[in-house]
Amino acid sequence: MIKRNSIIKKSVFTLAALLMLLSCSTDEKQTVITMTKLVMQDEFDVNGAPNSTIWGYNIGTGNNGWGNNELEYYTDRPENIKVLDGMLQITAKSELYLGSPYTSARILSKGRFEQKYGRFEARIKMPWGQGLWPAFWLLGADSDTVGWPQCGEIDIMEYRGQQPTKIGGAVHGPGYSGATSISKSYDLINDRFDTDFHIFGIEWGKNYINYYVDDVLYNQITPDKVTGEWVFDKPFYIILNLAVGGDYVGSPNGETSFPQTMYVDYVRVYQ
Image 1 (cartoon, rainbow, N blue to C red):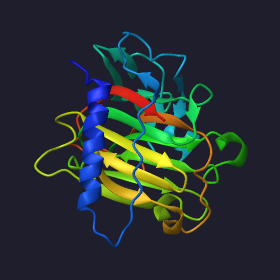
Image 2: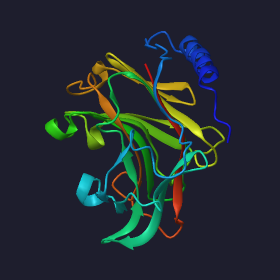
Image 3: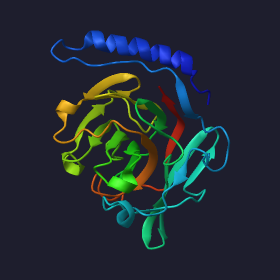
Image 4: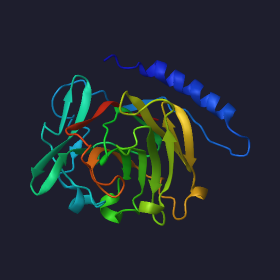
């Protein structure tokens, strides 16, 4: 696959952002500052395991390790995660593994790449089916010391496999976490997220986080929209994962086929 030229893409983004601002109603001011200095990128061009200078792994059960009543066991096996043909492939399998009925993978840039503010984006093609839960998100770099939700969480993209035309973006923090997170969904018109690649991103600055799908600005979250402390003023790290089951999506059913793969064309971060 030919990947997009980042300069052309950012020019298109700038135009799209300006058009979006012109189309916004005058009763809601939105901040848009285009960020064009590329400071981190993984194009997934080298076959094998993910780049260890950028990514580490979470290993273990989704249920006991990080809540949400997930059903998978995250591994670092190539059966569950690999780079092949210019793509990161995270694959969920139906198999009994160390007591869990499914396997999958979750990688994170913790301790390797962490940044305060910027544009974070990834180009992703989704799996499809009840109970599949791919996500592209950020956690505060102080997560080990202050815990969650005090560390803050920015969900750039969450997707329910049974709703292939819709994704969600959210923030979690002290006083607005879990079911009370601040969130908004985005619906594709006459298209599905599992049939082609789409770009999911945020532009994050002081006192605002803008949410984009394919360079369409669909939400802005600011301190006045949260019901607790604003904790998005420090470095965060990146997480990519494909969960199976859990409170957000429910369990797979008889119509969910396996294996299922989340394809990531690239991850890029700008200032």
